[in-house]
Length: 228
Figure 1 (cartoon, rainbow, N blue to C red):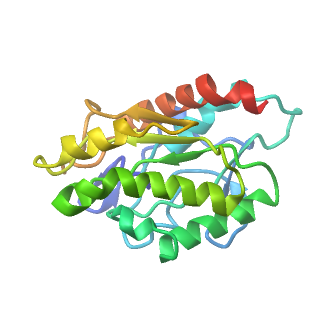
Figure 2 (tube, one colour):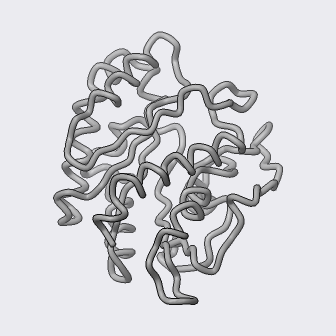
């Protein structure tokens, strides 16, 4: 979910749609664990090995913001970017660097407010392997259980995205694994059909906006009233 919208030939075009514009009410936790006003690319100091562009995070936050009950001028949403592109789910297993970094960042964020949900969009790399594809559902369910346990939030909402692209041999198997997960407070948003960049893998900017808004609808429709 690091976001490659607007990235062409390893360069970001710098175009930020109005749905992803900065707002004083939307903050992000930087790589240095400091809060700052969020702006695209959200993952620029997190996914440092690749060129980051527009992702769904800002569109999600701006779409959720109007439904929040907050004092005037208060920061309404804190985003905690953790994504690293091109990674398999085994790299997010408990004890692995990316998993431990994610939990560390979440705990740091929790010192300033409640963790309300996890947004998860991953799996293309697993579709490249028959073995990883076969193990995907079990690994994803284990990830959810581990994050909830390590953060002490047994019913922490997870909103995952069913893949829009990937290895043709296995993409439907990974998608079926994602869509078959049946755990409390786990909701799936389907990205299939959203327009892709010329690499035929990553979502283009307009699709990132649509996905962010779909994630927001899933959050507000399933969890916001319960959390207010």
